[in-house]
Image 1: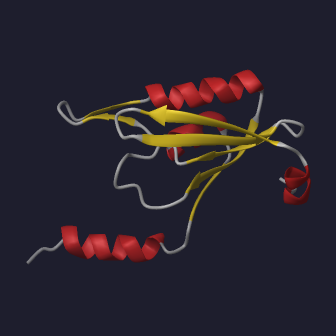
Image 2: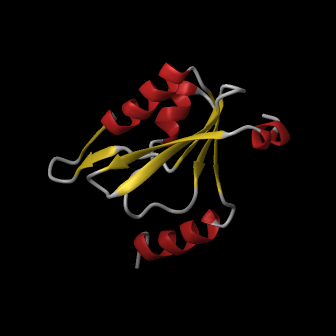
Length: 119
């Protein structure tokens, strides 16, 4: 994706509110270039049964397919303690590259020590 071209066009922004986690997944597209990014995607997790479904992600997928956008990036803006990401599911279904900030490694190190303590 040529970002200089991406920024010259009006962005098409669509939000998908996820009731279960009170979060929003965004699709930000350059409609002229037919390319988009997905930001902070979510899976549907039922805590009572421990099951994961894809209804919310499938809604995003249907929108992207309807608009005929090509997914350039699937972005995670931060560690999601409030929901499970659908990034891998979206990537496997639509293509695109998944990205998150490099400081995620710091968070992973802290949580690995906190939750994988074998003492």
